[in-house]
Amino acid sequence: MLLDCLLAIAERVLNSEKQYSLITEVPMATDFADVLLHTMFTILMRSLSKNPEVWKRFQKTLSKATRWEQTILRWAVKLWMRHFLYLSFSPEHLDVEHPQ
Image (cartoon, rainbow, N blue to C red; front, top):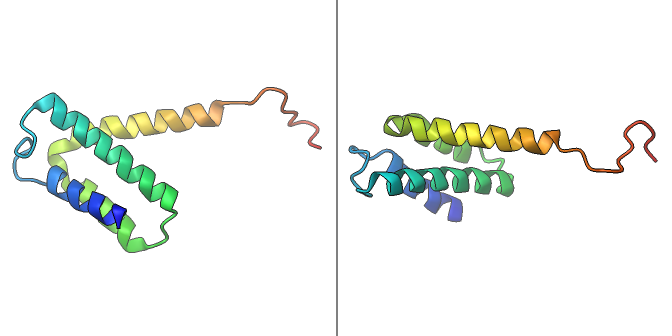
């Protein structure tokens, strides 16, 4: 239910005819779009949704959001940077050579 609501909000905000028609202040609109993208992706990942229709709807929403290309690219870069940070983290006292 929450995911459907977020997707509906994202479709309305990201796919509107004019980029800043719903939120007229440019910095606020850009920040809102960034937070919305991050929240949607996080909820999708945490829900472990195996429903392909939900993922297709998310993909369709992003592909239609041509007016928000820079915001989506910046969000994607931040997402990948965060994942690389998590993958590069090595806990102390972890012996990978001789597991117990």
